[in-house]
Length: 178
Image: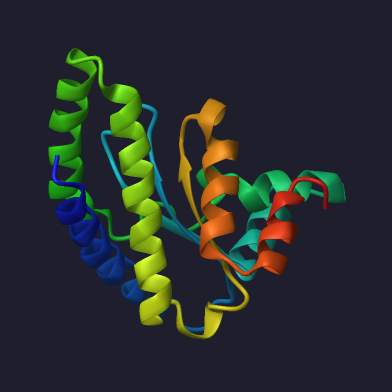
């Protein structure tokens, strides 16, 4: 796998998706933008959520206990903009599926997964530095995740440290405590 080329493809697809989201939902107050994959590293997809959609979701679910809110706020499966414009990632995901399968057959999956997480993080770093997140740069946390619960916290915390200011990263580390 040419990881530099893949990173460039992820940057391009992510730019398209996130800019489309920010344009389509121009009144939203986004608090997070991410790229995520699955346990088998078959996909890469963008996701985001806004304060408005979080409040709408918790009201609809009848959440009254403040200790339940972090579960809705930080669980990407609860987000309103999960897999936004996923068609931009179809070819990437198709190629990843084949490469992941091959890496597993050659007992190289652990390194493959590590390289994919790094490529996703580098893509988000590039987008941040380009200014893709615009007015949300200082208020929305950026990170990389996995739909695999077992690995998600480690990946999220690691990538958030790279992608955000130290103060935002510190707040993010306590995300389930508030």
